Each structure stands twice: as C-alpha cells, then as structure tokens.
Amino acid sequence: MMKQVVVWLAALLALAGAHAGIAADMNKVLRVGFPVDVTGFDPQALNDLYSNYVNRVIFEPLLGYDYLARPYKLVPNTAEALPEVSDGGKKFVIKIRKGIYFTPDPVFQGRKRELTAADYIYSWKRLLDPKVRSPNLGIFENKLVGGDEVVEAAKKSGKFDYDAPLPGLQALDRYTLQVRLVKPSYTMIDYFASAATGAVAREVIEKYADGSNWAINNPVGTGPYMLRDWRKGSRVVIEANPGYRDRRFPESRDPADKAVEAQMKGRKLPAIGRIEISIIEESNPRFLAFQSKQLDLVYIPTDFVNRVIDNGRLKPEFVKEGIQWTRAVETGWTYTVLNMEDPVIGGYSKEKIALRRAIGMGYNITEEIGVVRQGQGTPATQPIPPNLPGHDPGVKRPYPYDPASARALLDRFGYKDCNGDGYRELPDCSPLVLKYYNDSSEISRQFNELWKKSMDAIGIQMEFILQKWPDTLKMAKAGKVMMWGLGGAASVRDGEQFLTQLYSKYIDYSNMSRFRMDSYDKLFELAQTLPDGPERNKIYRALSDHFVTYAPVLFSTYRVANALVYPWVQGWKMNSFNQYPFTYLDIDAAKRKAVLQ
Image (cartoon, rainbow, N blue to C red; front, side, top):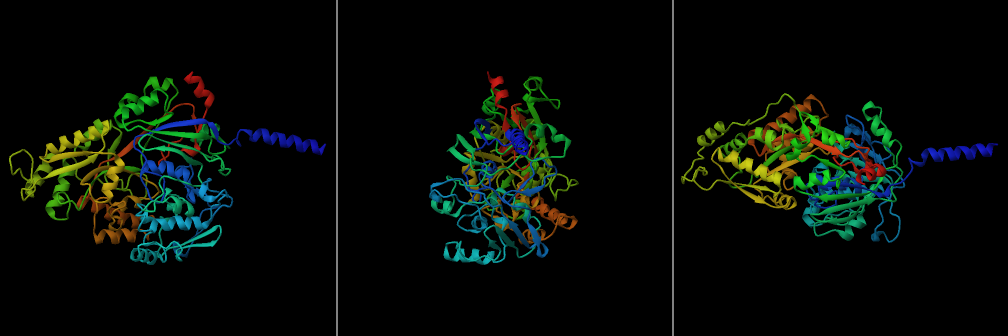
C-alpha cells in the first residue's frame, strides 16, 4: 500500500510539474526588429544599448532586477544571495552559486567549464585594462584598493598584468568573491547587476581577442542564450543555452501581474528556443514587418505613433487583433553632444559658451516633441531622468525655445554675417558651420530638417554627415565628431550614471563632449561617497548646473516608449532597464499558428 502511495505521489508531482519543467522549445521563435545594429558581444568592451540587449542574455552579472517587482528590486542572479556589505560600505563579499557552466567552446577542449569567483575578477580587471579602453571604466576606476597602482603599472609597461595581486578584488575561495573599496560607494551594489560586470572566461578572451583585447565576435557566457549567427547590418540570431541551470519565472504579489503569472507561473526559463533579431533601420519597413506578423513585438517608431494611437487609445484595427499596447516614460533622455575640443564650437570662453547656449535656445524642441515625436515625450530639464534618485521635479528647462533671444545673444558676442551670405561667422569672421552627425534613416532625416530650419532661423549654417551609428560612435570616442544627437537609458537605479558624461576621467568613454573641469570632478567624486538622500541630491543638482552653465550637452527630451505585442507572446511586462526581456518571454505556438493560417 505504501509503495502504491509513493508511486501515485510521484506521478502526480510529475504531472503537476510537467508544464513547468519543460526546457526551451527550439521550435519556438521570437522575432523582433532593432532600429540600430549591434556593435558586438563583449560586456566589458561595449556599452551601447542594442548590444547590451543581447549581451545581458549571453553573459551574466552576479545580480539582476526582479522582472515583475515595481519599484525595481535587486535579486541574486549567479550569486547565492545579495552581497554582505561591511566596513562602512567599503567591503562586499559575494558567494557564487555552484554548478553554473559556460556554454561549450573548443577552447575548453571538451571539458565542462564552471563559473568561479576568479572569472569575475578577470572580467572586472578587463574594465581597468587601459588597452581595452572600456566605456564602463567608471564602475571600478579609482575605487578598488590597489587598483590605481595596477593601472599605472599597465600604462608604464604597455601591458596589464592580470596575474598581479589586486587587494580590491580577491577570491576568498573558489566560489567567494571579495571587493574592497578605497572609499564608500553607495551605488556599487547596483553595478553588480549591470551588463558590464557579466562574467567572461579568460581562456576565451585570450584565444579570440583582437589588438584591443576585445572579443566581440566570439561570445561565450553562462547566460540563458548563446550567439548562433551575426550578420552585421542585417540580423542577429541567439539560441537557448541547452545547459542552462534550472531557473523559474518569478512570483509577484502585485494584482497587476495576475495575467502574466497565469501564463508563466513556475515555467522554466528560457522558454523560447530561438530569438531572431532583424536590423531594420527605417521606421516604415520595421512597422510593416510587425503589421504583416513577421515581428512579434515592436516599439512604435516615433514617426508612426499617430497611425496607431488616437486620443490616447489604441486604434480599433489593432485592438481587434488582440494586440497589447503598453507605454511608459523611459528612465533615460535624449540630448545633443557638443565637442568641447572642436575649434568652432568648443572651448570655455564666454563667446563659445554663448554660442552653445544660443544653439540650445534656437532649437525648436516644441516641434520635435509635437511633430517629429508625435507627442511622445516631454522637454528634458536635467541630465538625471524621472523616476531615478537625484531627479528634481522642480527644475525648469534651461534654454527654452526662444529664437529671438538666441539671435540677440549671438549679436552681443559678435557672431555676425561678415560676407553677406545670410549666415553668421565667428567673431573673427572665420567660418561658422555646425557639422551634425546622423544616419540616413527617415526619422533622422526629419530631425535633420528640424535642426536646419531651427538654425536657419538664428542665422547659423549646418552641414549633415550621414553614416552608420557604430562608425559615428567610434569617431566620437576619438574626439572627431563636432555635434551628435544621442539617447541614454539607465542601466542601474541611480542618477550617477548620467552625470559621468562630464567627468573628465571618462573622456574617450562616456564623456563624449570631452568636458574638463576640476570643480565638476571633485563634486562627482564626493557624490559617490554619499548615500541616497538630501545631501547627495544637493551635489547632483550642482553637477547638473554645470551642464547648464557651460552647455557642453544640450537637453532634448524624456521619451515615452510605446510597445505593441501580439497576443501569442506570453510573459510580457514593460521593463525600464531592458526593453527586450527575452529570458522571460514565451510563445503560444498554437495561437500564433491559428492566426497565421
């Protein structure tokens, strides 16, 4: 009798867990379209948004964010638990889960390669390696005990010694990592969840790295997906990692998550076997691909909003198809970078500051939001976006649109038409031409037209250099771009990341304006030692004031993101830190098949 009960219980448990325990179905395919190509797959070498959407599912950091919880909450990922913090915020001890393995690669010679504390130490040392020139350098630069000495030695010798002891990064045992800082950093714990701190295997980097110690073509991580195909400028295909550990869809107590939980409760992650990412730069073909059901989800292109939304409602033709519409103010902003080293537009003299401010006042932000963005945005008032610590809702926008004041300011500082061609020259009558870099997409064409019309109205001539986004990024990091429009999104839960844009030690990395000022650097470093609160917010405000006073970066918008998702996509919840949460999604294949037939 007892034996029968045991057998019955085992069968019942197997039946109950049958659906939940199914591994990724390789017959399930999720299709999405990126408007920008990725630049590669190396978490320490890159930090552009679209590369990170893929990197974060190939490489794994110690921590992550609870997919469903709002406000966002840190949770363990490859770590067993959240870090133990001691010594006044200067010491972190993290235990790593045992039995996590890198995806197979010939470099491992047929052996299973387990993730250890040493892998995180190596990966994080790469952030410091001067040869790598990581855009994520700021996570650890000038913070680790002994870090400055190791970096200086590398600069002198021309080679970073990855075997040299670094007291700030130590493996206490195979699975225990200790981080020691020279001073408290209250944002450090969040960086343990950033894509840039994902683990790589040393032997993989050493085999595949190029002359910059980047390995962007051969990603090998421990994450839920692995790269199957990358055709530059065309597509990226990732497939589920068959050896991924047992990880389940998270639970939630929020009533708003009931529908998502009903779809996904207890399901093993990832559920989708294959993700196909098409690079579709133009808005029209990207949206048409969604309408023809070649894409399963899409972020409504800026210039298509009015075709989809009417008076704050999804149009009936989309409702009829059961399409889910979600929208949110992004935890990011758009802005224009002005090169402070450029002989025409750069510099710290009063007349150069006046020129940059006049450009800001002359640009028609009202038309950008109302016409080009079709109402999906608000004017940015400061570098730290809404819903992040450090954002001050009481701050008004600097340089409001005022072409008359812009013209008066230019007149005052000697920017006049010297040769009678209708455009102003510099005070010494040498040419004044703004060279703005952009791509050749239709939406970029609209922005270019708005810029030209705005600058024509204040008498400044513009030229437009059209090229691929990765090419402009490379030039900007080398200080060769005069003027460029960008968008930034939060990677962690603090506003500090947006203030790095003027920190002089990050020139060639996140400081693309190449701004240099000791007062800014000192305030920035002081803010890092303070916990979230009024004192740190006061310093953040002073840092923001530097953006306004010197105008190396012009504020544009806080964008509103609108996503459309077909009803066969399960597990969807809009996420500010990851617009493409591949790991948490599933496909109802029967529902899709019924619609497509």
